[in-house]
Length: 454
Ligand code: TYD
Ligand code: MG
Image (cartoon, rainbow, N blue to C red; front, side, top):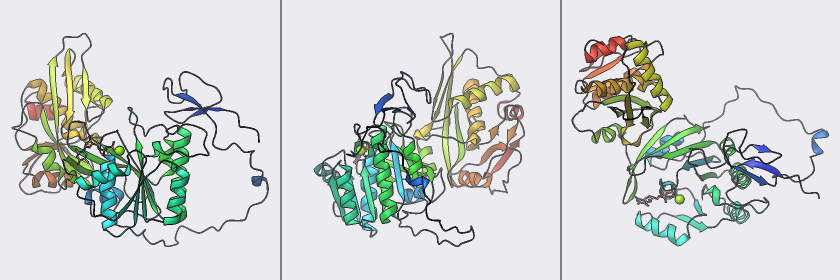
């Protein structure tokens, strides 16, 4: 059989081309293109030319029972999964090296095993003895999890097919080696083949499969985004190094809401659940200082209060610095531009640093107003009134737009002892006992209200 023509595949985005080049046309990455033998090296299928059997069609109204779920009783994990683990589902857990994926999945393996599932944990990265040692340290050694250290995908699949566990955990897909694919482990073809084989195993046998995937420095699950399409659920495990908080975020979930988060704390005894993240994120807050503002946000289905910190200082450089941790840099640029154009408050010649405390990454536009408040407070060197929360979206015209779940945000703020909220006009706020709501329709009014005449 003739070997298929070589194909050049970008290891960053998975785009294929027929010739090598230094820069990927699809994603713009440099030096990411590697020659790989394509997965299918057989002749094009003739079968498609002949008639196939006709498939059964149904209508939308056919009733389908909700998938049975198993809860691990790690509530933070169960919520992110959409209420528990669904049989025959394929889950990908991505995250930076060293963030705690193996720890999380070992704890999950033990929790699901204790909840009555048969669980197999395959590590391609650590020897069984290492995993056992970690299990002992975490107090999980008595959980009925069966363990293997293996990277040969064929052997793993044969074993899984024979054992038919309820849950198989594979750490990580980058270490798996499919012997029918002619490229090195960790390459796009190998990762794609491993993810495909494990996903089809899940569908074929009704077992749930959880795979670990490492993330590249620009935040993509290493190499193939194609893997994200194959699986049912994609979770990211994220956090700041040097911070003990870890956030498990669902970015795709065919069996539950996306954008749900679970919060954990890395301790000496493994990952501990954080059932009330607001209290924890605010615990580090001392007396309110200029530049510090509490944002009442929503993460998934849950309100989360978090401190937004800004520092504004004269720059020694011709090009002032704009440095952001935990928020979107281009959104910061937009808010600075709106403050300048609509309120006449310039930030030229000033360095701006913005930080979301606790290692949380905020993606909601509802944080706009809290960011603007933090920037103004830092610039004016004057703190907001104490016990105040802020939220609302800012439009380019300088108008404030109401955001969703206003009432939930206010209730959470009240629960944590806040007495004042600054928010846009509109939005279903209801009345919250013990809270003063100050509602404004545009940013100029906000500046006037909070910092005196704008
Ligand atoms: P690990 O789960 O190996 O990360 P990953 O699989 O994502 O690469 O976690 C490694 C880090 O977690 C390591 O730096 C040590 C820390 N850690 C703790 O702080 N406490 C613990 O109980 C465990 C098991 C790990
Ligand atoms: Mg690991």
